[in-house]
Image 1 (tube, helix red, strand yellow):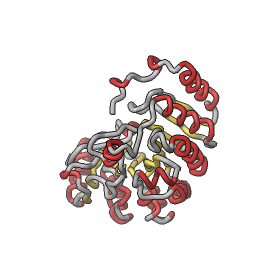
Image 2 (cartoon, protein in one colour):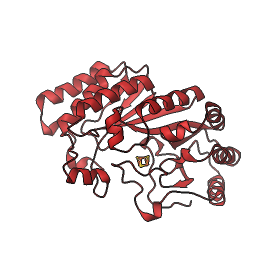
Image 3 (cartoon, helix red, strand yellow):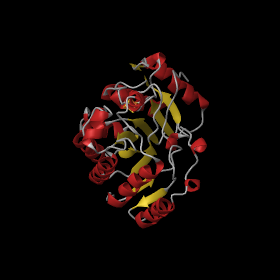
Image 4 (cartoon, protein in one colour):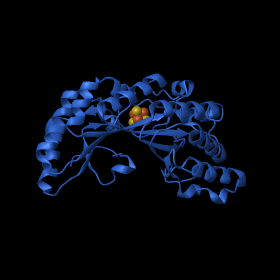
Amino acid sequence: MDYIGNIFRPPSEAESLLLQVTVGCSWNRCTYCAMYRDDEQRFRIKPWETVEADIEEAAAAGHPIPRVFLCDGDALVLSTDKLTRILQRLRDRVPGVRRVGIYGDARTILRKSVDELKTLHDLGLGIVYHGVESGDEETLRRIDKGSSRDETAAAAHRLREAGIRHSVIVMLGLGGTERSREHAEATADLLTEMDPPFVGALTTTVIPGTPLHEAQTRGEYTLPDPWAMLSELEILVDRSRLSRCAFHTNHASNYLPLRLNLPTDREKGLRAIREILAKRDPGLLTPEYRRGL
Ligand code: SF4
């Protein structure tokens, strides 16, 4: 397989065939993101011949490949024609593909009509992983996310209409100490409006070399402490109203790993969070050395 740069994928795509159809991220401006900052990862669309050869290599393996993940950071930016060609070829050549996943965001989702998304869904596109990060307009502006909270909600509705599952990522602490509460409350409200089937909450880590790190150095951003991060998590679980959602905080960056089915597990989750907040015992948190970042 032809891989350029570091390959990132969601944890739930660990068993998937990783097919790199674009390199890097066409946006590449989110202030906290260090994924595609190397020169070799500047954004480009990989030539069809390269993608075609990778699909043939997977086909030659001769065993069923139930899941495929299209890399890199926002591969949904590809035109519907290009994605159709890739999905069709996977369907024709690789046995057993049941679901194709991809990273997308509000910009790339809203560039496609419901009909286009339905076409992609019919060809196997089953899930879009979307770093929503925050529902707070001011935080979205500060992190240069490139889309508003209303656009983000609209993107969720469009995916639902097309029958594509939506896996949403939000980031604890991204509003800094200054907007911690606003960020958490607005994110809970946006989740309610989006009502996605999957939510993963990650804990913000400030990575050297990113604009967020520069803002921190200038004193313009202060990372909330672990207790404040947990208070944000408490707000998310308490305030959001989700009809049926697998809500996970088991990403390595988190201080408290939880797997909740909301709304059923709301009280259980709140009890766990509040117990730790009441005790304030650092020994109850995932230790820093184990927070694989
Ligand atoms: S859209 Fe995703 S990959 Fe691109 S810069 Fe933002 S966080 Fe990074």
